[in-house]
Image (cartoon, rainbow, N blue to C red):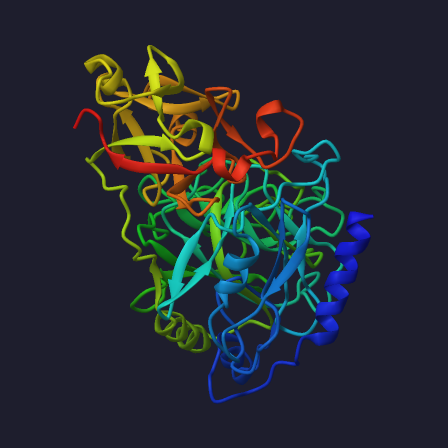
Length: 505
């Protein structure tokens, strides 16, 4: 029944969404159309991609009552009206259920179904992204990206106008260049229509991450590459391409295009400057990729067979009919930099190097703080008369996120090198073992407190789970679920933390 209702919601959006056209404001898809390679899919949760677009960008569903609402734009061709989401999701959590296609072709992205790799949930469907987890500003207006944690994915296996076979196409996406991993596969683009691995050349999708399992580029990564199925390619050679650089941009423009026996990777800083070409030449030197056998599904955050181990953040992206010229893409890049993507500027108490304490805001527990005793983590009442040891145990240094520099990690004030991290969904204090899984488990992303107080801390690798106190223990908890600590009762209070100066500075 849920999927039927979702389909009705998508259909309603198709009826109400206006057809894109040229307008006084110019969007990326207007530029592609002028260049003779029109968009056949256009997805964004942050802004309109056509100058005349005034419809819905995406849909959110809140946990408190499973109601949904659509988030539109402030004006035709403008930024997302994030106040719609903020008001609708106040006091609870929301997930992004639909990313609407602005092209008018109905190529919307919804919850990815199970595939060859199955899926993380009991029914095989992928998780949905927390709607508040990736705040940014666009042109000075607050907006939200799509934060993909491992297990999260979106897909459309029944599309209209997407390239198939060896037909020419282009695509770009804006990603968070600081959030990635080596899992398979953080993709956006063309994939199999049955969610299975159908062999070499059945995909053509942008990949971003630092996997070296197939191709790779210069330095330690991450890199923009092409997922062409059964391989991530950085160029002609199935392995190394010295011309594909490690990415360091906070906001990244990633570009991929392909036509018969010819393809290209390009990229640049989405905040300033021009695009560079990292590869331009014939298809990879490996059997099965010439000619291509593209099938025309669209994926976001996953591999073609629904591989769901990757992470990343998506803000906007399009797919075109035909092979865009470099000049067209250069004009699109100028439009992107003019959109003025930026990190949020709200004053934050999370300053690297600062010592803080985290206090519960639930009515029962406002004197209780996150503390540790050895490796155990719980909440304890701390007052001015508490012992020096108890005060120190409730004090943590803020560090740049070990897995994502846009988020934070919390190092014990009195046990140097040990950090708060989750293990089996419960918080513990462990020494940093320098593994990627530790870094992900010890990284938390703050957003406004779900109950209107302080801040809520989302797990970097389980973005719909937030740090919560429950019976004085501390977990990463979803809003409703099979575990007792996932109870929806008092969830918004229990995941909201007041951040204050440390009891032991």
